[in-house]
Image (cartoon, rainbow, N blue to C red):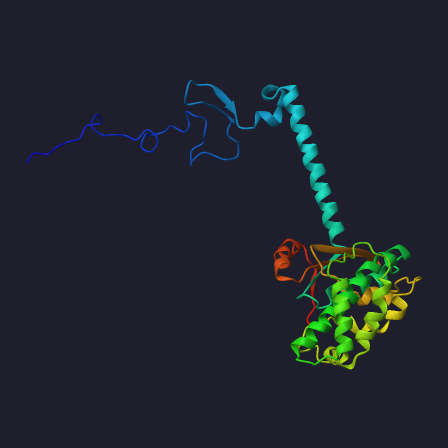
Length: 294
């Protein structure tokens, strides 16, 4: 076969990779030139020969590219950004002195009692108005205690004497449709009935065996103080509030300062239908206090 010579017209040249570039004609020193004198910073644009500067025009002369109103908006945005960052730093330094404690545990494990004790120690206890507001709750605890003792006696198979059964029937009939609401006095007609029921040895035996049947721990305390609680001049004392039992619904919070720290303590309901609310309180928690029953 004969020799074939490729001409320059047949060779495809990539416009960016293969085209030879004369660096000297574009003002850029070649590898053999001296680098002591810097190259000029103005080049001819490939498209249309328009010259451009290497230095950003927006920094050298803002008025040439941004009008006055736009430049003012930029400065306002920068100022707002600086203010937001300063506020974030202030909030961060403030949160470093906040101790967030979360009380978790099953129902009736003593979480609310811990919260009450902290309030007594660090927040000067309960005011007279706070104590007076607890009267309906204490009366309800007495009623619930008697009902639980009666149910426990039946569950344990105790035979109750006729006079005790008569008092039980009278008690249940009276409180069948009774609403405690904001009652500030315990029903006077039920005071001797409650006293006789608690005086029975069979009922007290139910309290002793409360590991087998459910009876509130506060039952003995309130029933042994029934004379004071049912008096006309009754005002709850601090121990009455500590022993009182109320189901926690939702979230309770107390705050107090100790030295240079701020403590925030949260108490949440321990029932299963309340535990889904726990997840919302885990943000920025310092410590978790778990309460358990033994």
